[in-house]
Length: 151
Image (cartoon, rainbow, N blue to C red; front, side, top):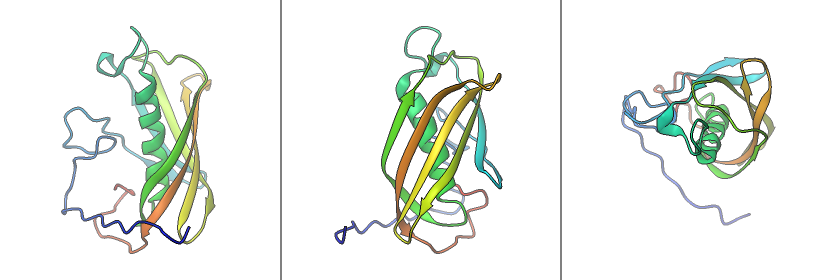
């Protein structure tokens, strides 16, 4: 893997356009992340605008939620990284208007790669989706604008 791409991520101060966590993205999830010793968590409740089959979250939206929580976990502490690959396992249909808890944790970290695992649970604790991801580390320089690990 000696031919890693040269990627430059330049964010303007106050950037809020991220689909997952950006406050300025009118159609985005607007996820708010919390950190603890186990990793990262966030809450999300889907609506009709995110459905596939009537009454259920679209599978691509579920994948996007898992990618977002894992990306935030990988980038915590000012590490700039991009998702190289991710896998999603949909275990059950996820109803819209159901409060969900997203969690992720780092399972392996090297100088160039961070691997994460994630879950989405219903409020009763039922796991409805699982994910794993590999993130390519672009830059490890901490940034002043990275208060909660936002991209």
